[in-house]
Amino acid sequence: MLGLLLPLSGQNASLGQGMLDAAQMALFDIPNGRVALLPRDTRGTAEGAAAAAREALDRGARLLVGPLTAPEVEAVKPIAAERGVAVLGFSTAANVAGEGTYLLGLLPSEEVRRVVGFAHQKGAQRFAALAPGTAYGQLVADALKTVAQAEQVNVVQTVLFDPGTVDPSPSVRDLAKYDSRKAALDQQRKQLSNARDPASQEALKRLNESIAAGDAGFDALLLPVAGQQLQTVAPLLQRYGIDAAHVHYLGTGLWDNDPALATEPGLEGAWYAAPDPTGRLDFEKRFATLYGHAPPRLATLAYDATALAAALSRGPEGADFSAEALTNPSGFVGLDGIFRLRADGRVERGLAVIEIHRAGNTVVSPEPQSFSGF
Image (cartoon, rainbow, N blue to C red):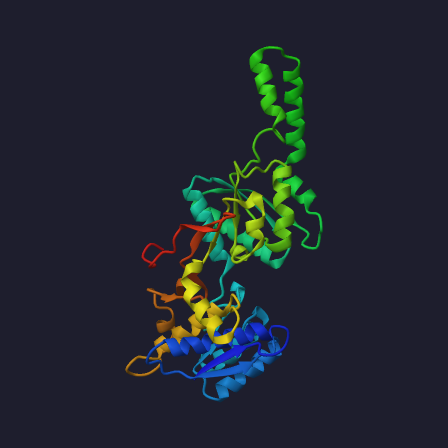
């Protein structure tokens, strides 16, 4: 019995229903699976998740899939641990992992590791971040520091801006060191304007086409923002001399399936790390055929978690949801690529690097097919 803890009522009810539908598809797709689904409504709250977990466990659930958010996972964790039952949660908050609770969510730290590593391979040595002053923004900024240390590159600047502001110009201006660079440019122009030789006039012509003197001080800029916030920030980067011709823009999973990317010229050629979208195309088509609408993005997580449980139930001695089985170092293959669960409860994923183009995004570094190189 597989306890499936999802928000089937409340503000995330449509997401929860979509994830339930995906889980049911997984059971149908995995042959000889010996698990049955026991869906329970968390109502999207910690209290509801705790009650749902107790009910599922009382009904004989041997593995809990879900819940969705960090407070819900935190509420379920001690209840499941007391019964000796593992949890496959969907939260991206790494601090709730461990002690029999595993996270299948798309962790920002994994996305940062992949895209920064790729940028380093392509020659970037100096990194910066412009992030909202939120828990997510701080998490990404911290992940950048950790990855930079592992990659032996430098984080030269991190600027956190007020997430509620309608005008992040001061933060972008600060990141670009625009005022000092503009003053240096004006000084250079003044010196050259007094010279009459052809070389000086040619240099002055070039400077008159510049926004600020020198470079921004970094080769790659991590931008963990999306939607309207990204559309506001992107033009400001060019305005204050953070030129995409010299600084490569990097994104996180927030950019995955974001329609704003294709409409922003300044993001042409930017990179972000995410599962290869072609891996879920067949699932999305079948889901739409069955249910009459596109699946929510997180539906693949429910599918993969259920498929994993079904696969682990096919042994000659029945289901094996032990820590040893769940943390198989070879990992598993899902709709979102390969993944494996670590002993500390966090997930490692083999992500692709995707390059943004108005005519259609392209995969510039494919997903790895195994964990042999990790």
